[in-house]
Image 1 (cartoon, rainbow, N blue to C red):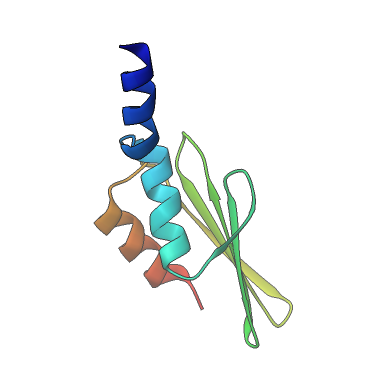
Image 2 (cartoon, rainbow, N blue to C red):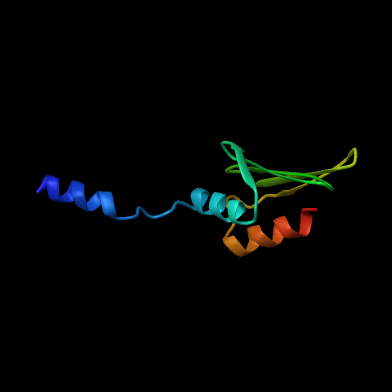
Length: 91
């Protein structure tokens, strides 16, 4: 029986944790994962960095020598809240 369970586990998808779901949402918005919990998007007009942690989401935008940051204090927000927060603060 254990062989059957092992073979079944190879083909079934494990449920996503809220942290993994937030990472997936950020990557789908065009950000590249730089390290654990850090995502970056570089363009000709500047750079946007997102830090994802258990305390919340921090975003920092660098454009032509100027930096602006914002913090969403929600611990692992849902997909819609995360998308609207990123889109309202990115370049």
